[in-house]
Picture (tube, one colour):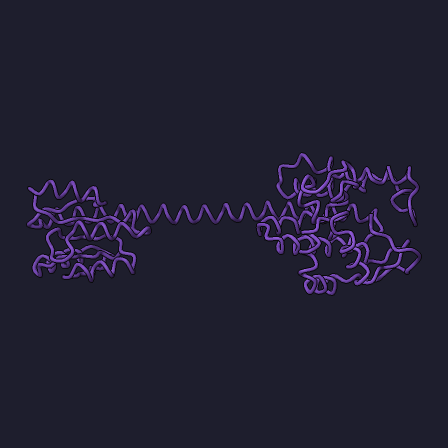
Length: 357
C-alpha cells in the first residue's frame, strides 16, 4: 500500500519513512516539498497520506483541502501531524477532511498504531468498493439476461404470427431496422431506438387471432372482411399490454397504433397527428414501405421509386411528415438494410400493387 509522507523537516521525514517500511506490504513515498507531494497525490492513488501542518508555501490544511477536491480521494485516509496544544488547527483539519492526528514529537508506538488503523480502514474501503463493483457487474449481467429473454419472447411471438401470415421473416427484420434508423435520425433517445428495433417485429402479432379464411385470402377483402382484419391491432394490444417489460409494452403500443393515419383516417381509434404515439407513426412508415416493395402471392412488388413517391405523396395524410423526412434522409442505410435482409425467394408477381394495409 502506498503511504505518502509530506514533511519539510528532514529528520521527521526520515523517521516516518523508516517506520512505514516496518509495516508489511507498505511502500513509503516521502516528500519534503508539499507542492510536489500534492502533485503526486492528484496524479496517483495513495492509500494513506501523512502530512505535517507547519510547512512553507502550502501548509497541511491547504494540502488537505486540495486533495479532497479530487472526487476519487473523498474517502482517502489523511493523518495530520500537529502539536498537541494546536486544537484549533485540529478542528480546522477535521473541517477540511482530515481523519486522524499524530502528535509532535512523533511517538513510534503511536505512529505505528494509527497508521495500521488507517490502512485497515483503507483496506475495508477498497474491499467494499470491489464488492460494489462486483455487485454492479452481477446486476448488469442479470439485466442483460432479462433483456435477452424479452427479445427471445418477442422473436418467438413474431415468428408465431409470421407462420400464419404470408409475409416473410425478412420483412419484420427490415421494417424493424427501418424503424430504428428513423428514430435515430429524428434525434430520439438511443435506448428508445434500440428498444424499437426489438419491439417493432411484434406489430402484427394480433394476426394470431385473425381467421385463416380472411388472413390468407388472396386479393382484397370485402368491407365486412376488412372490419374483421382490422381487429388484429386490438388483439395484438390485448396480447401484449399487461407485460411488465418496457419492450413488450412498447410492442403493445405499436401493435395498436401502426395502422393509424396522420390525418385521423386510420384505425382502430382514428387518432390524428401527435395523438398517435411516436412509435406508431414511425412503424407506419417502415411497415408500409417494406410491404409495398415486397412481392406477395396477391400482388407484385413496387419499385423503390414507386414506394418512395408513395411515402412523399402521403406525407401529412397517411404518414407523419417528420417520420417520412427522417426515412428519406437515411435512404442509403435503407438500401443497405434491403441488401442485408433480402428475401430468399420472392413469390410470383401478380396484379395490382397494394399499400400494405
